[in-house]
Amino acid sequence: MESSTVTDGVPGSMLVKELDQSLMRHEYGVMVCRLMEHIPAEAAPSFGASVVEVPPLDAVSLHGHHEHEMWVLISGAGTFEVDGQSTAVAGTTLFYMKPHQLHSIRNDDAHVPLKFLSMWWD
Image (cartoon, rainbow, N blue to C red; front, side, top):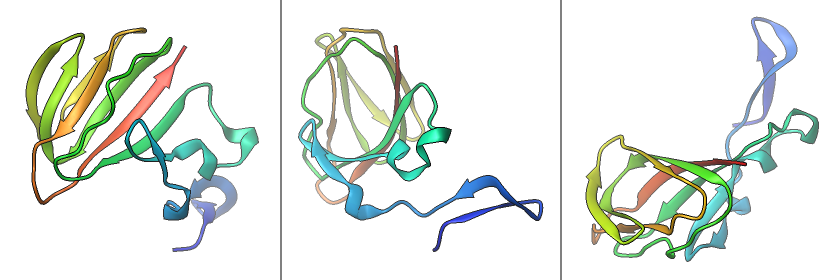
């Protein structure tokens, strides 16, 4: 799929673009695709977003940071942990972490990757 910037026949009013898998990189122990790298700098919002893929039986490294963060589970099943409390998760699930909360997610499936959308802001 090529990049397209056409909406309602008006060039330049919307960006539709397949994610460039070559931009996936290793962060927090898993593969991360930072979405703002796919849009023009002048269109970048004041928040960050990424698609995260956790391989089977792997996990996002336990971490915390100064930003608020929200995850939306896209596919897979696993165990979500925040500040030492764990819960099993599956399906379309929303997670919110306050600044400095330690958080992680582990993929409990031996065959299927776990995928989620991450968004963060100050």
